[in-house]
Length: 196
Image 1 (tube, rainbow, N blue to C red):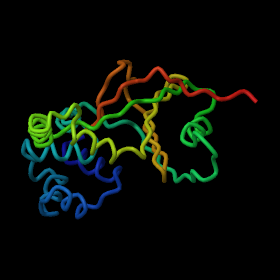
Image 2 (cartoon, rainbow, N blue to C red):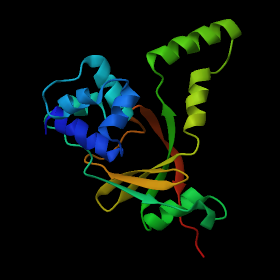
Image 3 (cartoon, one colour):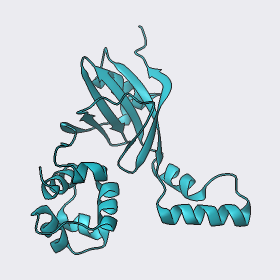
């Protein structure tokens, strides 16, 4: 698969039109068209922005041998049907009789956010990062899980509106790993079905 084909596939899997992607990257949509048709290759700064926006690694975009995770499934959900631990209940219903691990997620800071963090920390002697806190609040409605089922592994994100499952091409075996612009730690909390 070419870099253009990978950009197009990742853009579509994120549910973005060329115009929406161009707006988020602050470039013309014609530039996106040229990238996706392999008439041009994005520069380093644009590769970083594309990687972050589309939740794919730069290595994935540049490596001709690497294919994106085999399937992404998005389904709408209704949290109001559940009394407590709604997201845990949803993932147990979606993946019964599997091994489900809760993931701790943290958005990686951009260079600009790191500079601001250092300046604010120096001026106010803040014990925590303000940009990191802001990113944490922005992602607070998302829960992430790693599901092992038979010989397959799924990376699952649940928001207040939907559940998104990605079948992984290679199993994630490390306790810490990165996907796109997010860092994850596999927690010691295993989601288990309650015996009735």
